[in-house]
Length: 111
Length: 118
Image (cartoon, rainbow over all chains, first blue to last red; front, side, top):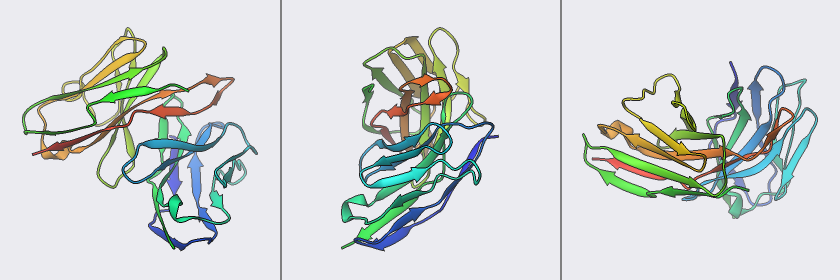
C-alpha cells in the first residue's frame, strides 16, 4: 500500500543554516505529494506541493522536487530562520482521496 | 481555497461521556476526512465521510466508537463515544481543494479540536 517515510527528528539548526528533511514514498502510480507545516499551537498549513513527476514545489524559501526515480520528495531551504521552527509533515494523496502522512519532523532553529 | 470552521476548539471531558465535533465548510465538497493526531504523533485517518452514504472507516476505527454524520455537502460531525483517557488527542477535519486529471491541488484542514479525557 501507499506509505511515506520521513526523516525523524528532532532537528536543531542554527539560524542561516541549510536545511534538508528527507522524505521517500511508496505508491502505485504517481500521486500528488505535499509538505505541510504545523507551527507551535497552530493548525496544519500547506507549505508546498508537486502534482507530477519532476515538478518542483516552492514557497517561503522552501523547495522540494518530485523525483520518481528515487521516489523522493526532500524538503530544502538554503537559510533557515527562527520563525521556521515547526513540525514538518511529508504526505501523499492516497488512492481513496485522503492524505497519507509521514511521522513528522520537528525543527528547532536557534538564534 | 475552502475555509473550514471547526468546533469546539478544545474540551475537557469525563470518561464515559461523548463529545460531538462539528465542521462547517464554506463551499460544497464531496468528501470530508476526519483525522486523529495523538500527542507528539502524526495524523491518522479515522474515516471518510460522503454525503448520502455511510462513512468509510479505517482499520482500527469503528462506527460505534466514532459515529459520523454528513447531512449535506458543507457539514459533518464526528462523535467520540464512551471516552477514555486514551482518546485524548487532537481531532481534525479536512477537505480536498481540487482534484483534476489525477492531480491534487491541496487540502484544507480545520483548526482542530484538542480533547482531554479525565
